[in-house]
Length: 221
Image (tube, rainbow, N blue to C red; front, side, top):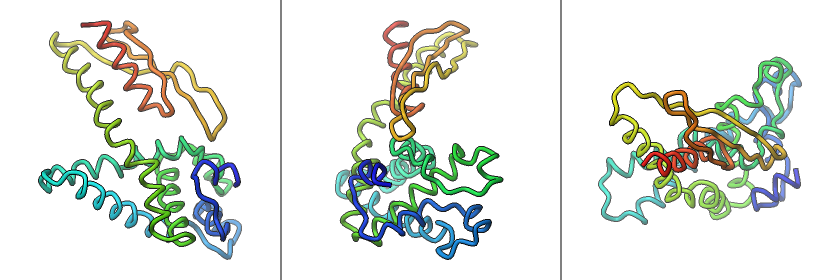
């Protein structure tokens, strides 16, 4: 738990809150856990994440219309974004899962990991207040907004470049996955019409894909 707290940049006064945030309903049901599952914390964390993100975007983009703010917020708080946070934190290794869920690959299930991120955020809020929860959101999600906006353009730009010739296809393949659970590193390779056009490395598969797309663009132009 100390390693996870170090990754979070927050040390709990009541560590049972963190333990509860990592307890999936399958484990709580099987073990008859008195603290229950993390579902209530997930509910609270979802609201905190949405509010903090909305406030940040409202302040940062004073000229953006409501529709654009909604779109940006959705991209920042979506399951994919939360799974990236879980990967950075190595959250999967700390989850408490029931035997069936464990056997079925629940530790890698995107929905379970994303829900756990929201539950952890709620645990920080209950333990340290809104300012501490805001710091977590800022560090792991909001500080990535510019990076995500730029990186999304690499895949879009590659798609547009390739589609100039009708019928061409793009695919991404995992080449390498290294590092401990709490600090994974991924290498992805992008293929265009059956030929490798570039590789990229990142702390998540999505980030590595973007870097691979960037390499491919430089090669194909």
